[in-house]
Image (cartoon, rainbow, N blue to C red):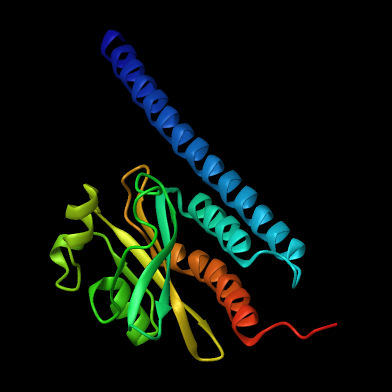
Length: 204
């Protein structure tokens, strides 16, 4: 009887631990879903607020912020192609190097972002130093550490306007294909706004 009671107690303790762990996972999943919904709502509001007269940089900046919420990152950037110099230029930056990175430019054929722009395809790299496309000069120059990133091209009517890139998830997790899909939503909005600005709004 004593042995049976002891086994029952151990079983109940183990079951309690398992249920607590499952409950914690569910809480984290609900929190992530709430973050996604909130970010998507903000992105939707950004789209609805867009008018031809709105400042394009303001729209891009709001969209960047929504994308960072969706992917749970503290650092992100938007680079535009400079057709005259064939360079990618950091135009909008969020995170640790927000004050110093804007304006920095590099050969658009180099780096993971350069590959994304040239091939018109997204890239997910969860260990950048194991990827031969990664250039460490930017990290070294700005005293930043890139561990992982996801980057997608800004394309409208088959023209590449630039690249949007999210760096290092806040919880240290890997970027996923789902993150690519979410970032592509933001990239489509950004590219459409850039294409509108480049083609020129019709005069009313």
